[in-house]
Image (cartoon, rainbow, N blue to C red; front, side, top):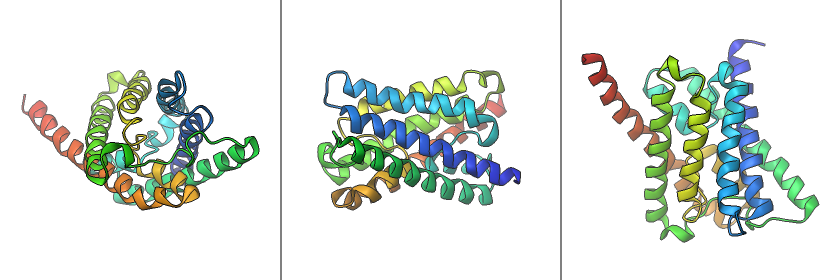
Length: 228
């Protein structure tokens, strides 16, 4: 297997785990249950921590098209790998959501009613949800760009990124269910159908906009740092 294929397979597996465990916690517990909100946020964050220390040295553990896009803009990822990563991430998300669909069907439980898919309903509609997702993705990806750009922070990068995803979810879960990741939204929406598919464009476009903004802002800091 070529190095590129290993990276793409790693991204596929990592994204599948993120969707299965993160969305799975919402499906099984429900964010509205006692401790459910925090449990779901932690499940997403801990999934990233686990995968970072499993596939981080293989692919960088992006498991998110928004992260890959920012890395491409920051010239840390080639155009070919950008495409390969995104394709692998979306496939992984579909695989993770498919496995979750099977498990939830067998267990006859889905506390979200939509396999953990995202929704604009509690964020004031499309405009509110779009703004929320842009802001949350901007924060999340900006932290990733910073912590992964310093080799001295390599040993703690996975923990920092996982904790950042956790606090982003703590804010975003009551509003949109928190996407900040187009692949994470695509997988469950394909199985949930209905309104989840109708809302999906927000959770694809908004994280990408947030990603681009974070890369541009981080680029300003990098220029100033180099100038010093």
